[in-house]
Image (tube, rainbow, N blue to C red; front, side):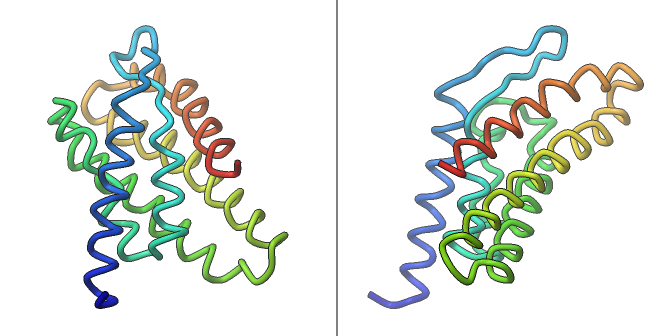
Length: 151
């Protein structure tokens, strides 16, 4: 199979996996209208498996299908950056089996920082200081993504 075609197919598969993981298990977060989900693990792994560029493309489609239209551009940027940076860290660090685990863990840390910080910044412009209410849930979601992607 052509290498570019294989990358495109894998990117589409990871986009679908991220959507399924995000939309299938939703734990509502009180007071925010959001939810915790395992989709971040797929976002991290899309950067690791596909590399930074294709991982970025696969990462941010779930809000479009889930009806969270105001979040589509925000999610695409934040999740895309998570995949991009996770892929770059993995390419730079992962030389043997131990360093691969470290690289995936660092991808999880990147996820926590970008999800909690990125959504807070964007939501601050939408909702004002009440956006801080989503930080704990986004940290929990990020930790879940770190654990699942590590496994």
